[in-house]
Length: 285
Ligand SMILES: Cc1cc2nc3c(=O)[nH]c(=O)nc-3n(C[C@H](O)[C@H](O)[C@H](O)COP(=O)(O)OP(=O)(O)OC[C@H]3O[C@@H](n4cnc5c(N)ncnc54)[C@H](O)[C@@H]3O)c2cc1C
Image 1 (cartoon, rainbow, N blue to C red):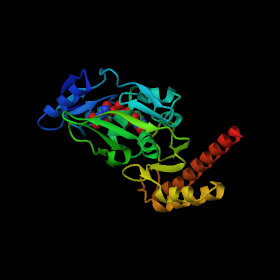
Image 2: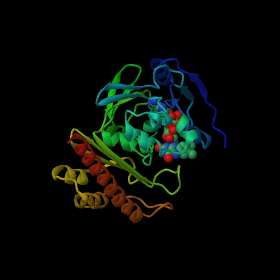
Image 3: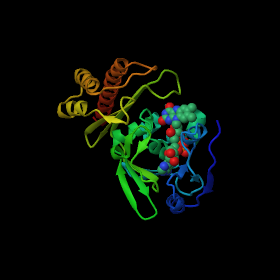
Image 4: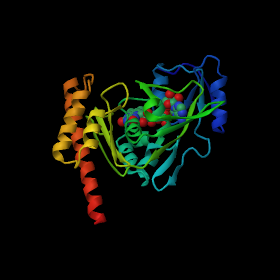
């Protein structure tokens, strides 16, 4: 199938991009970044925007900036490939390396992935695990949204029609771990888990088990209330995570299979995180 007809403009600045979005009366204008999710939707006519606003030539949106020793700002046009190659935020590098194939990672962007809000996508899971702050502009305002408030449901975000993500800011976790199970290399994960320790508190986020990334709050309470984080506690927290979710089954895997994956992968990331803590304490002493 071919896309329905649409107009196309290239924005020279973020302000111009959101002005274009705001000017379209039928409110169907869409930003195009890497096009790796939008173009298939256009081709299938699941999206029928009257205007596409291309943001790829806006200067300054494809940069990663170290704000301090412990925080970074990542522009909306930073590609998955750039995330793989950077060293400042190893959790993002690991997560991005699981996205699709090289061509997709070269074109796809962090802003596009977050805005697309696929519940099985890797970057939204990391965004929730580290508590990313998303910077958003519209023709008249600028605001920040916590990652957990950005994701509303499957392919649904909390952005207004004339809003655009310009960047995200995040604290760098002191310790982190990431695990995913996918049927084949490059497929979306059946279950994805990210754990991040920021200021001594561990946050755990799960992908693929609901209509948006979910925090494993019961597991977080267990691992943050008790010390040390040993194998037994990791197993207990993994069981708690699996009991708290109600994944849907599909032809890729039944609900109980996905529940089993949650238990396995949460246990795995917590053991990795414990080992990272251990190595750090040994190198200090
Ligand atoms: C074969 C294939 C396999 C894939 N596998 C994976 C995978 O394993 N994991 C994964 O996470 N993804 C996967 N993807 C999707 C890919 O990662 C996309 O790059 C990503 O979902 C969207 O980024 P994009 O820059 O391409 O966005 P686009 O496709 O350009 O846009 C996606 C949506 O976000 C909106 N948007 C884009 N940028 C902004 C912005 N700055 N502000 C507001 N709205 C914006 C657009 O209007 C559109 O609605 C796959 C895609 C393909 C084709």
